[in-house]
Length: 112
Length: 286
View (cartoon, chains in turn cyan, green):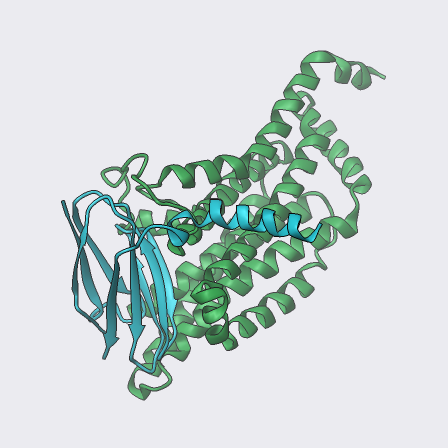
Protein backbone atom coordinates (compact mmCIF):
# COMPACT_ATOMS: atom_id res chain seq x y z
CA UNK A 1 0.00 0.00 0.00
CA UNK A 2 2.80 2.34 0.96
CA UNK A 3 4.81 1.62 -2.16
CA UNK A 4 1.66 2.21 -4.18
CA UNK A 5 1.31 5.63 -2.64
CA UNK A 6 4.92 6.41 -3.37
CA UNK A 7 4.39 5.35 -6.94
CA UNK A 8 1.55 7.79 -7.34
CA UNK A 9 3.52 10.54 -5.66
CA UNK A 10 6.41 9.89 -8.00
CA UNK A 11 4.12 9.87 -11.03
CA UNK A 12 2.54 13.11 -9.90
CA UNK A 13 5.90 14.75 -9.35
CA UNK A 14 7.27 13.64 -12.69
CA UNK A 15 4.23 14.75 -14.64
CA UNK A 16 4.00 18.09 -12.85
CA UNK A 17 7.66 19.04 -12.79
CA UNK A 18 8.94 17.68 -16.09
CA UNK A 19 11.31 20.56 -16.73
CA UNK A 20 12.60 20.57 -13.17
CA UNK A 21 13.32 16.87 -13.01
CA UNK A 22 14.82 16.52 -16.47
CA UNK A 23 16.31 19.16 -18.81
CA UNK A 24 18.67 21.92 -17.74
CA UNK A 25 17.03 25.29 -17.30
CA UNK A 26 19.22 28.30 -18.16
CA UNK A 27 19.53 30.48 -15.06
CA UNK A 28 20.24 34.20 -14.85
CA UNK A 29 20.87 36.18 -11.67
CA UNK A 30 19.80 39.78 -11.17
CA UNK A 31 20.72 41.80 -8.07
CA UNK A 32 18.82 44.67 -6.55
CA UNK A 33 21.07 47.30 -4.96
CA UNK A 34 19.96 50.82 -3.92
CA UNK A 35 16.68 50.21 -5.78
CA UNK A 36 18.49 49.48 -9.06
CA UNK A 37 18.71 46.23 -11.02
CA UNK A 38 22.21 44.79 -11.80
CA UNK A 39 22.44 43.93 -14.62
CA UNK A 40 19.55 45.97 -15.97
CA UNK A 41 19.74 44.12 -19.29
CA UNK A 42 19.40 40.34 -19.39
CA UNK A 43 19.76 38.55 -22.71
CA UNK A 44 18.04 35.17 -22.89
CA UNK A 45 17.48 32.63 -25.68
CA UNK A 46 14.17 32.52 -27.56
CA UNK A 47 11.57 29.76 -27.08
CA UNK A 48 13.28 28.54 -23.93
CA UNK A 49 12.06 28.38 -20.36
CA UNK A 50 14.43 30.43 -18.22
CA UNK A 51 14.88 30.83 -14.47
CA UNK A 52 15.62 34.30 -13.10
CA UNK A 53 17.11 34.49 -9.61
CA UNK A 54 16.48 37.93 -8.14
CA UNK A 55 18.72 38.72 -5.16
CA UNK A 56 17.57 41.71 -3.13
CA UNK A 57 20.64 43.23 -1.42
CA UNK A 58 18.59 46.18 -0.10
CA UNK A 59 17.10 46.20 3.37
CA UNK A 60 13.69 47.10 1.97
CA UNK A 61 11.33 44.81 0.06
CA UNK A 62 10.82 45.18 -3.67
CA UNK A 63 8.26 43.79 -6.08
CA UNK A 64 9.56 42.47 -9.37
CA UNK A 65 6.89 43.29 -11.90
CA UNK A 66 6.53 43.14 -15.66
CA UNK A 67 3.46 43.64 -17.81
CA UNK A 68 5.23 42.19 -20.84
CA UNK A 69 6.52 39.10 -19.03
CA UNK A 70 3.29 38.83 -17.06
CA UNK A 71 5.13 38.35 -13.76
CA UNK A 72 4.76 39.83 -10.28
CA UNK A 73 6.64 38.79 -7.16
CA UNK A 74 7.59 40.39 -3.87
CA UNK A 75 11.23 39.92 -2.84
CA UNK A 76 11.75 40.76 0.82
CA UNK A 77 14.76 42.82 1.88
CA UNK A 78 17.93 40.71 1.93
CA UNK A 79 16.13 37.72 0.42
CA UNK A 80 16.16 36.10 -3.00
CA UNK A 81 13.45 34.77 -5.26
CA UNK A 82 13.15 32.53 -8.30
CA UNK A 83 10.97 33.52 -11.22
CA UNK A 84 10.45 31.30 -14.25
CA UNK A 85 9.79 33.03 -17.58
CA UNK A 86 9.29 31.87 -21.12
CA UNK A 87 9.36 30.21 -23.56
CA UNK A 88 9.25 33.65 -25.21
CA UNK A 89 9.31 35.01 -28.75
CA UNK A 90 12.26 37.28 -29.65
CA UNK A 91 11.81 40.86 -28.49
CA UNK A 92 12.25 43.26 -25.57
CA UNK A 93 10.39 42.67 -22.30
CA UNK A 94 10.80 45.50 -19.78
CA UNK A 95 10.47 44.88 -16.03
CA UNK A 96 10.51 47.18 -13.01
CA UNK A 97 10.42 47.27 -9.23
CA UNK A 98 6.90 48.26 -8.30
CA UNK A 99 7.88 49.63 -4.91
CA UNK A 100 10.57 51.92 -6.34
CA UNK A 101 9.54 52.24 -10.01
CA UNK A 102 11.47 55.45 -10.68
CA UNK A 103 14.88 53.80 -10.34
CA UNK A 104 14.33 50.05 -10.50
CA UNK A 105 14.02 49.48 -14.26
CA UNK A 106 15.33 46.66 -16.38
CA UNK A 107 14.92 44.77 -19.63
CA UNK A 108 14.83 41.13 -20.67
CA UNK A 109 15.98 40.86 -24.28
CA UNK A 110 15.02 37.63 -26.02
CA UNK A 111 17.32 36.83 -28.91
CA UNK A 112 16.77 34.12 -31.52
CA UNK B 1 3.72 59.68 -3.21
CA UNK B 2 1.82 59.04 -6.44
CA UNK B 3 3.34 55.57 -6.55
CA UNK B 4 1.93 54.81 -3.10
CA UNK B 5 -1.51 56.17 -4.09
CA UNK B 6 -1.66 53.90 -7.14
CA UNK B 7 -0.27 50.80 -5.44
CA UNK B 8 -2.60 50.98 -2.44
CA UNK B 9 -5.56 51.96 -4.63
CA UNK B 10 -5.00 48.91 -6.80
CA UNK B 11 -4.90 46.53 -3.84
CA UNK B 12 -7.88 48.14 -2.08
CA UNK B 13 -10.01 48.12 -5.26
CA UNK B 14 -9.55 44.37 -5.73
CA UNK B 15 -10.93 43.61 -2.28
CA UNK B 16 -13.48 46.46 -2.29
CA UNK B 17 -15.33 45.15 -5.35
CA UNK B 18 -15.75 41.71 -3.77
CA UNK B 19 -16.95 43.23 -0.48
CA UNK B 20 -19.40 45.61 -2.22
CA UNK B 21 -20.82 42.86 -4.37
CA UNK B 22 -21.38 40.37 -1.53
CA UNK B 23 -22.71 43.03 0.84
CA UNK B 24 -25.17 44.26 -1.80
CA UNK B 25 -26.28 40.65 -2.37
CA UNK B 26 -26.78 40.21 1.37
CA UNK B 27 -29.08 43.24 1.53
CA UNK B 28 -30.86 42.42 -1.72
CA UNK B 29 -31.67 38.98 -0.29
CA UNK B 30 -32.71 40.57 3.00
CA UNK B 31 -30.07 38.57 4.88
CA UNK B 32 -28.08 39.68 7.91
CA UNK B 33 -24.77 41.37 7.16
CA UNK B 34 -23.23 40.35 10.48
CA UNK B 35 -20.69 38.18 8.58
CA UNK B 36 -18.87 41.43 7.85
CA UNK B 37 -17.41 41.55 11.40
CA UNK B 38 -15.58 38.18 11.35
CA UNK B 39 -14.65 38.84 7.72
CA UNK B 40 -12.87 42.09 8.60
CA UNK B 41 -11.27 40.69 11.76
CA UNK B 42 -10.07 37.60 9.87
CA UNK B 43 -8.94 39.65 6.89
CA UNK B 44 -6.96 42.22 8.82
CA UNK B 45 -5.33 39.76 11.21
CA UNK B 46 -4.62 37.47 8.25
CA UNK B 47 -2.96 40.29 6.31
CA UNK B 48 -0.85 41.15 9.35
CA UNK B 49 0.24 37.53 9.80
CA UNK B 50 1.07 37.12 6.10
CA UNK B 51 3.18 40.29 6.15
CA UNK B 52 4.86 39.33 9.45
CA UNK B 53 5.77 35.87 8.25
CA UNK B 54 6.63 37.02 4.72
CA UNK B 55 10.24 35.80 4.99
CA UNK B 56 9.64 32.19 6.06
CA UNK B 57 6.61 32.07 3.76
CA UNK B 58 8.64 33.16 0.72
CA UNK B 59 11.34 30.58 1.55
CA UNK B 60 8.91 27.72 2.08
CA UNK B 61 8.69 24.93 -0.51
CA UNK B 62 11.98 25.81 -2.14
CA UNK B 63 11.14 29.50 -2.55
CA UNK B 64 7.64 29.00 -3.88
CA UNK B 65 5.69 29.63 -0.66
CA UNK B 66 4.41 33.05 -1.69
CA UNK B 67 2.90 31.67 -4.88
CA UNK B 68 1.31 28.65 -3.17
CA UNK B 69 -0.17 30.91 -0.48
CA UNK B 70 -1.60 33.28 -3.11
CA UNK B 71 -2.96 30.30 -5.02
CA UNK B 72 -4.66 29.03 -1.86
CA UNK B 73 -6.21 32.41 -1.04
CA UNK B 74 -7.43 32.91 -4.62
CA UNK B 75 -8.87 29.39 -4.58
CA UNK B 76 -10.89 30.06 -1.42
CA UNK B 77 -12.34 33.27 -2.91
CA UNK B 78 -13.16 31.49 -6.17
CA UNK B 79 -14.78 28.44 -4.54
CA UNK B 80 -16.86 30.53 -2.09
CA UNK B 81 -18.05 32.92 -4.82
CA UNK B 82 -18.84 30.06 -7.19
CA UNK B 83 -20.88 28.16 -4.57
CA UNK B 84 -22.88 31.30 -3.75
CA UNK B 85 -23.50 32.03 -7.44
CA UNK B 86 -24.50 28.47 -8.32
CA UNK B 87 -26.95 28.27 -5.39
CA UNK B 88 -28.34 31.65 -6.36
CA UNK B 89 -28.78 30.75 -10.02
CA UNK B 90 -30.41 27.38 -9.24
CA UNK B 91 -32.87 28.88 -6.77
CA UNK B 92 -33.75 32.15 -8.45
CA UNK B 93 -33.57 31.48 -12.17
CA UNK B 94 -37.35 31.38 -12.43
CA UNK B 95 -37.79 35.05 -11.46
CA UNK B 96 -36.97 36.12 -15.00
CA UNK B 97 -40.37 35.04 -16.21
CA UNK B 98 -42.10 36.91 -13.37
CA UNK B 99 -43.36 40.45 -12.98
CA UNK B 100 -41.36 42.77 -10.78
CA UNK B 101 -43.52 42.62 -7.63
CA UNK B 102 -43.85 38.87 -7.78
CA UNK B 103 -40.13 38.48 -8.40
CA UNK B 104 -39.41 40.56 -5.30
CA UNK B 105 -41.70 38.55 -3.05
CA UNK B 106 -40.36 35.32 -4.54
CA UNK B 107 -36.80 36.39 -3.71
CA UNK B 108 -37.73 37.21 -0.11
CA UNK B 109 -39.41 33.82 0.22
CA UNK B 110 -36.50 31.97 -1.39
CA UNK B 111 -33.83 33.76 0.60
CA UNK B 112 -35.57 32.70 3.83
CA UNK B 113 -35.04 29.08 2.76
CA UNK B 114 -31.38 29.66 2.03
CA UNK B 115 -29.18 28.51 4.91
CA UNK B 116 -28.09 31.79 6.53
CA UNK B 117 -25.12 30.29 8.32
CA UNK B 118 -23.63 28.80 5.15
CA UNK B 119 -24.29 32.01 3.23
CA UNK B 120 -22.63 34.18 5.90
CA UNK B 121 -19.74 31.73 6.25
CA UNK B 122 -19.00 31.75 2.50
CA UNK B 123 -19.22 35.56 2.32
CA UNK B 124 -16.91 35.92 5.34
CA UNK B 125 -14.46 33.41 3.90
CA UNK B 126 -14.24 35.12 0.51
CA UNK B 127 -13.93 38.61 1.97
CA UNK B 128 -11.37 37.71 4.65
CA UNK B 129 -9.13 35.95 2.12
CA UNK B 130 -9.40 38.88 -0.31
CA UNK B 131 -8.51 41.38 2.44
CA UNK B 132 -5.69 39.19 3.79
CA UNK B 133 -3.98 38.94 0.42
CA UNK B 134 -4.34 42.53 -0.71
CA UNK B 135 -3.70 43.88 2.80
CA UNK B 136 -0.46 41.95 3.28
CA UNK B 137 0.96 43.48 0.12
CA UNK B 138 0.16 46.97 1.42
CA UNK B 139 1.83 46.27 4.79
CA UNK B 140 4.97 44.90 3.11
CA UNK B 141 5.05 47.91 0.79
CA UNK B 142 4.69 50.45 3.59
CA UNK B 143 7.20 48.58 5.78
CA UNK B 144 9.82 48.87 3.02
CA UNK B 145 9.97 52.62 3.69
CA UNK B 146 10.67 52.31 7.41
CA UNK B 147 14.42 52.51 6.83
CA UNK B 148 14.04 55.70 4.84
CA UNK B 149 12.50 58.30 7.16
CA UNK B 150 12.23 60.93 4.44
CA UNK B 151 10.05 58.60 2.37
CA UNK B 152 7.82 57.27 5.14
CA UNK B 153 5.52 60.28 5.37
CA UNK B 154 4.79 60.59 1.62
CA UNK B 155 4.25 56.81 1.42
CA UNK B 156 1.81 56.82 4.35
CA UNK B 157 -0.02 59.87 2.99
CA UNK B 158 -0.15 58.38 -0.49
CA UNK B 159 -1.34 55.08 0.96
CA UNK B 160 -4.09 56.84 2.93
CA UNK B 161 -5.24 58.73 -0.18
CA UNK B 162 -5.20 55.52 -2.25
CA UNK B 163 -7.16 53.65 0.42
CA UNK B 164 -9.62 56.55 0.64
CA UNK B 165 -10.25 56.59 -3.11
CA UNK B 166 -10.54 52.78 -3.19
CA UNK B 167 -13.02 52.65 -0.31
CA UNK B 168 -15.08 55.50 -1.82
CA UNK B 169 -15.30 53.70 -5.14
CA UNK B 170 -16.23 50.52 -3.25
CA UNK B 171 -19.03 52.39 -1.43
CA UNK B 172 -20.21 53.83 -4.73
CA UNK B 173 -20.28 50.37 -6.30
CA UNK B 174 -22.21 49.06 -3.26
CA UNK B 175 -24.97 51.68 -3.60
CA UNK B 176 -25.03 51.15 -7.35
CA UNK B 177 -25.68 47.42 -6.81
CA UNK B 178 -28.07 48.05 -3.90
CA UNK B 179 -30.45 50.32 -5.78
CA UNK B 180 -30.79 47.97 -8.74
CA UNK B 181 -34.15 46.19 -9.04
CA UNK B 182 -33.66 42.53 -8.09
CA UNK B 183 -34.24 41.29 -11.65
CA UNK B 184 -31.36 43.44 -12.85
CA UNK B 185 -29.19 42.94 -9.79
CA UNK B 186 -29.09 39.14 -9.88
CA UNK B 187 -27.77 38.83 -13.45
CA UNK B 188 -25.37 41.70 -12.75
CA UNK B 189 -24.15 39.84 -9.65
CA UNK B 190 -23.65 36.60 -11.54
CA UNK B 191 -21.86 38.22 -14.49
CA UNK B 192 -19.61 40.31 -12.22
CA UNK B 193 -18.81 37.22 -10.13
CA UNK B 194 -17.92 35.30 -13.30
CA UNK B 195 -15.55 38.07 -14.36
CA UNK B 196 -13.96 38.23 -10.89
CA UNK B 197 -13.45 34.47 -10.46
CA UNK B 198 -12.21 34.16 -14.05
CA UNK B 199 -9.64 36.88 -13.38
CA UNK B 200 -8.57 35.20 -10.13
CA UNK B 201 -8.22 31.85 -11.89
CA UNK B 202 -5.94 33.48 -14.45
CA UNK B 203 -3.86 34.84 -11.59
CA UNK B 204 -3.56 31.30 -10.16
CA UNK B 205 -2.25 30.11 -13.53
CA UNK B 206 0.21 33.02 -13.49
CA UNK B 207 1.46 32.10 -10.02
CA UNK B 208 1.99 28.47 -11.10
CA UNK B 209 3.81 29.54 -14.28
CA UNK B 210 5.97 31.85 -12.21
CA UNK B 211 7.29 28.95 -10.11
CA UNK B 212 7.70 26.75 -13.16
CA UNK B 213 4.98 24.25 -12.23
CA UNK B 214 3.09 25.13 -15.40
CA UNK B 215 4.66 26.04 -18.71
CA UNK B 216 3.87 29.48 -20.07
CA UNK B 217 3.90 29.29 -23.83
CA UNK B 218 2.87 31.91 -26.34
CA UNK B 219 -0.02 34.26 -25.57
CA UNK B 220 -3.39 33.47 -27.15
CA UNK B 221 -3.79 37.06 -28.35
CA UNK B 222 -2.49 40.56 -27.76
CA UNK B 223 -5.18 43.13 -26.98
CA UNK B 224 -2.66 45.83 -26.01
CA UNK B 225 -3.84 47.88 -29.01
CA UNK B 226 -7.34 47.95 -27.52
CA UNK B 227 -6.57 48.33 -23.81
CA UNK B 228 -2.95 48.61 -22.79
CA UNK B 229 -2.19 47.18 -19.34
CA UNK B 230 -0.16 50.28 -18.54
CA UNK B 231 -3.06 52.62 -19.30
CA UNK B 232 -5.51 53.84 -16.66
CA UNK B 233 -8.25 51.54 -17.99
CA UNK B 234 -5.84 48.66 -18.19
CA UNK B 235 -4.77 49.14 -14.57
CA UNK B 236 -8.38 49.52 -13.43
CA UNK B 237 -9.54 46.44 -15.31
CA UNK B 238 -6.55 44.48 -14.01
CA UNK B 239 -7.32 45.45 -10.41
CA UNK B 240 -11.03 44.68 -10.72
CA UNK B 241 -11.24 41.77 -13.14
CA UNK B 242 -7.64 40.56 -13.61
CA UNK B 243 -7.47 41.89 -17.17
CA UNK B 244 -4.44 40.81 -19.14
CA UNK B 245 -3.58 41.93 -22.66
CA UNK B 246 -1.61 38.79 -23.48
CA UNK B 247 -3.09 35.77 -21.67
CA UNK B 248 -1.58 32.36 -22.35
CA UNK B 249 -3.55 29.22 -23.21
CA UNK B 250 -3.09 27.83 -19.70
CA UNK B 251 -4.66 30.98 -18.27
CA UNK B 252 -7.57 30.66 -20.70
CA UNK B 253 -8.09 27.07 -19.53
CA UNK B 254 -8.09 28.12 -15.85
CA UNK B 255 -10.55 30.93 -16.68
CA UNK B 256 -12.93 28.49 -18.37
CA UNK B 257 -12.62 26.02 -15.51
CA UNK B 258 -13.52 28.65 -12.91
CA UNK B 259 -16.60 29.98 -14.70
CA UNK B 260 -17.86 26.57 -15.89
CA UNK B 261 -19.98 25.68 -12.79
CA UNK B 262 -21.95 28.95 -12.89
CA UNK B 263 -22.40 28.79 -16.67
CA UNK B 264 -23.56 25.18 -16.19
CA UNK B 265 -26.09 26.25 -13.57
CA UNK B 266 -27.45 28.94 -15.92
CA UNK B 267 -27.70 26.41 -18.75
CA UNK B 268 -29.53 23.99 -16.46
CA UNK B 269 -31.93 26.77 -15.48
CA UNK B 270 -32.73 27.41 -19.14
CA UNK B 271 -33.21 23.70 -19.88
CA UNK B 272 -35.47 23.25 -16.86
CA UNK B 273 -37.56 26.24 -17.87
CA UNK B 274 -37.99 24.88 -21.39
CA UNK B 275 -39.06 21.49 -20.06
CA UNK B 276 -41.81 23.00 -17.95
CA UNK B 277 -43.09 25.92 -19.98
CA UNK B 278 -45.70 28.04 -18.28
CA UNK B 279 -45.20 26.48 -14.87
CA UNK B 280 -44.87 29.95 -13.40
CA UNK B 281 -47.85 31.21 -15.35
CA UNK B 282 -49.93 28.65 -13.49
CA UNK B 283 -48.72 29.69 -10.07
CA UNK B 284 -49.29 33.30 -10.90
CA UNK B 285 -52.99 32.74 -11.55
CA UNK B 286 -53.49 30.61 -8.50
